[in-house]
Image: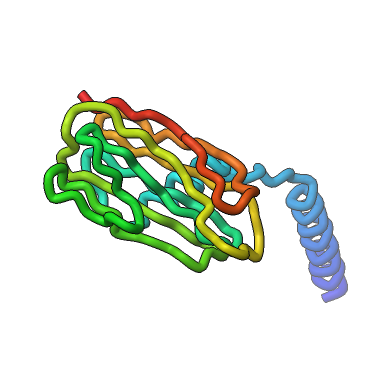
Length: 169
């Protein structure tokens, strides 16, 4: 019986030593850092979820309290913006129009089948008395191409900024 006690005590000590060694190995393991999405990838994902899509989609994103307007001058000379939300001739439409600003603000213009030509994208700082100023991102989705992002600071009321000219063939 005494021998059995010594065997059990030895086994108990051996189990404790093995558990301690295993815990030490676990704590020494470095966890692989998880890659965080790049800000550009997050903006593209955010823009995908906003409004309708088509062969051409242009989305404006901002996260500060102000009214920033997305304008697109189309090849036919007509402008799509908050005043002219749809062009029946080209099929272009502004389907998201944020006027208050704040976190998650966006505007979106899209064409199911855009006519060939140049599309002039610009921003207008519309507010009379903005609460904030800051960075805006325009994301362009064009069929057959990778999405492109364009960043700019909007700091002055009534400011107009040309962002990009998009060519559709």
